[in-house]
Image 1 (tube, rainbow, N blue to C red):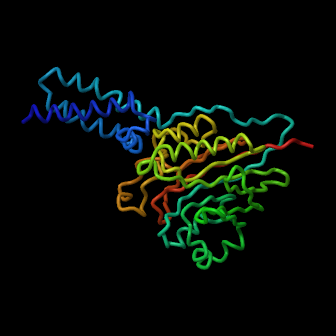
Image 2: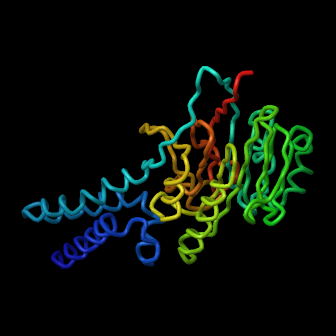
Image 3: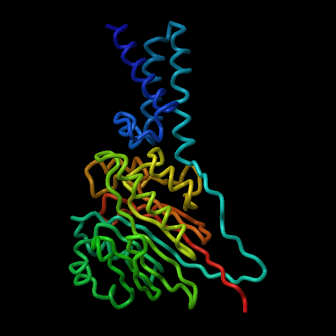
Length: 320
């Protein structure tokens, strides 16, 4: 019986290591796609399996084999989660002045009716730009919080009405390559284009649908003359191919890597499992033509199954 348990645990641990060495970003293989979605918790699984194996093999040299097998599964996912590829960052010169604004991306959760809590984050007196996903009940939210319409300029995606941008700055909308964008006038002639994203779930659909959407975002960035922010609920983790592609072509507003900082955004209190705290990151802020700093995930989810992610952007203009 003990031998069978050892073999089963060794097999499970070996499968996690095989995924770490060969399966990350390979969403076209179903088992790898599922592990990619849960990749941020693989080190915890691997450590648990290792502890069990070391105890079962405590009088055998096999425990050292278990350690060797477990190490990739405990280390590689931590590296991937913090992977930053695209290095171009906007820098200031002596001929430029600086304008700053705050930005939040927040997936509200469609059946979240806790409007008083939601209004704590959709507040243009506190935040300059708030991109929201899953807010199909916009009219009900505004009726419950009429001051939002007084203080925020609002842009609703014409194709996907659950995607809404709230801004302390003037806004307008336009289409580019079949994608609906919001144009924000940050300061006079300083214009920032915003793409609000709510991607199809990577874990339940063909990987091609996610990577195809990302290909459109990348082509869009090549046609945009000026700063661009692509943010929202990507329904994919740092281990999915779609997020890797975004990191190759955009700057990524990344949470500073301190032990006490959390970059995971799901699940939150709006989902039963959220009582255990967030496990994975599926919400992102990507950008070009700007500088990002002080990125963090909010401690409150405001009734949603996601936690908002916030950053501060800087944009520069020539001094006349």
